[in-house]
Image (tube, rainbow, N blue to C red; front, side, top):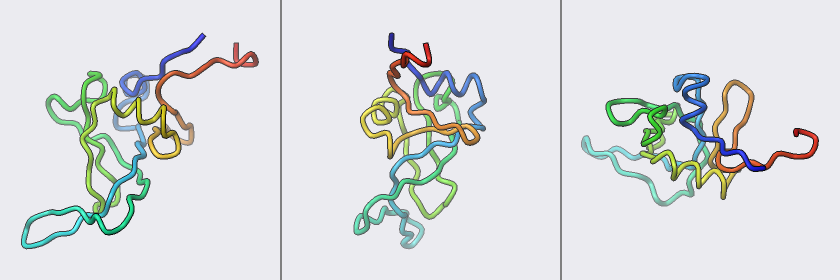
Length: 115
């Protein structure tokens, strides 16, 4: 039987502040106070934290902002369901860690050993 792992459930269980979110991001360039995204280089998978503000709370199972720890990379606004789908289809690029435990979101099949 398949079990759905959702980012909102991880936020409720471990706290949104403890989620280490990984996704591909591009470096930002600053120009006269404006911020642009550098499209000349390929995106890199970066570690981010969930930046929460009204209507952008991970545990509410709607939308969140992934803000890279390295501020030279651009942040990304994700719908929870979109991030989960991306994690399911591209698990090397989109995933969540809590401590050293890695979670690939979406449907996970239970193995015979785990059952």
